[in-house]
Image (cartoon, rainbow, N blue to C red; front, side):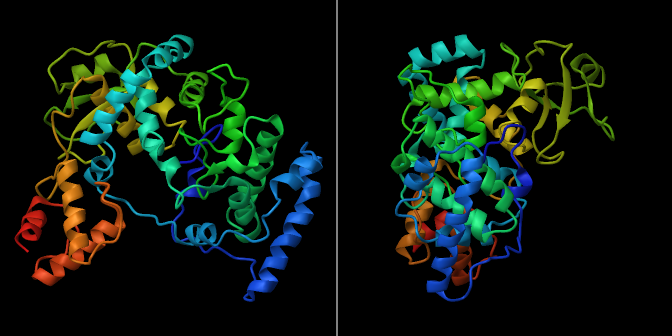
Length: 408
């Protein structure tokens, strides 16, 4: 899950690993419910002093008497792991995300024309962000993911000392969203940490960047695709997006030892022997660029420019910004990587990954969705199958494993 902020992603709050979440909830469920209700009652004064009407507060919390146990569990178990580059990108830049992006580009073309004209942010970057954040809105249809933003944030403010300050701030912002009438409390849905809508904005960032693009008087990033994409475009523009410029280039490394750290003009990188991997010339050699090697020297290399850092204002992660850029290029038809990621196995197509999950399910090893995304559940199932077959337990979604499954 990615979470928006006004100035950065608040990465320390949401990607922290192995958190020692100090719960305030006592052991007794009945007493715990009373404690939560007392917290809700006492926080009312804070919200009112921050500009939230008492009537809005009471209406928002009507029917909320208990903390959300799933939010508490997710706060406890958010992992910190450094996945290999290929693992991260294979789950985000693939056949289906590209094909759906192209279909959405055609479906929403009139609105994308207007958004691009108003904000100067290219449509393919916006489509890639939409894919990354909510799988083009599909995640919003999942009851196992979407939940009450008010209840989620109140749960974190009450039960999670690590995130309490964040949650209190976001809860007040969420209540102010209800007060503006942009959305009602029954539809104020989001992720467990309060990220909302097609393009996953936390409440304070929604307040800062929300746009009523379709002109119906509401900034509705939950139901209006134009509003959601324009809100993302507004964030990027106000953080320095350079219209008509790319995010960066895949490059071929010259021979030799160490490369310079930091940024310098593309012209200087060229002098060191860097060239575009596809053989085309760089567009603006005066642009300052920085070298990124997310997969090490054995993987693809990139020179990234200003717009790459602007994408990071949406999510402060090099991998995220690079995935957005690569997916945007693929949706636009510019082509994929010249040098693929260095994987220790034979890659599967998106459809083959779905088949892998289906076959693992048939063996009673996997009970998740057949979504082609290889997460912890899929990897555990692969390892269980490998153990059964006497194979090395890597958890890799490889053609080798799929062939074994097809034999069974």
